[in-house]
Length: 153
Image 1 (tube, rainbow, N blue to C red):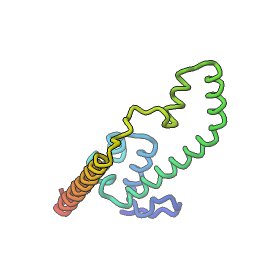
Image 2 (image 1 turned 90 degrees about the vertical axis):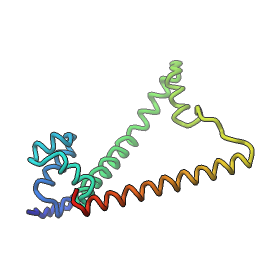
Image 3 (image 1 turned 30 degrees about the horizontal axis):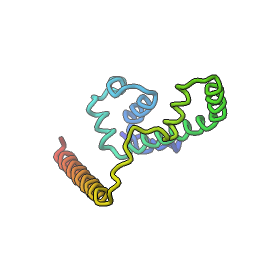
Image 4 (image 1 turned 180 degrees about the vertical axis):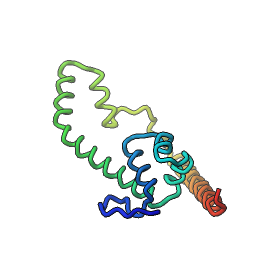
């Protein structure tokens, strides 16, 4: 049974159990708690999250809204954070100063990298090979998941 939802919140086309599961997950419940409360197995909730496009889209939409809301709230706090950091630095708080410098990327543990153009070229070629291998692996993994889904496993 599919319940249509006219609220425009991305839950259209979700079954009642899926809507309930989505609400519980969004409240911070674990997959196990969500499954138990919804009356489905943990595997079902995982399948919805991994393979049900409508469920995953609604879940992703909520995550996007949460990120945007959090970003807005953090931006509103930047003046307070700057004032607090300024006071800490004026009080000689070396820890705060160090964190600021690290956060700005001015202190890094990473070496700058090779300075010889030939070494840089080799490094770049190796990185490209690694990227291609990772892409091939990901494609293979997706193909395996598709085959598994087709077989109903």
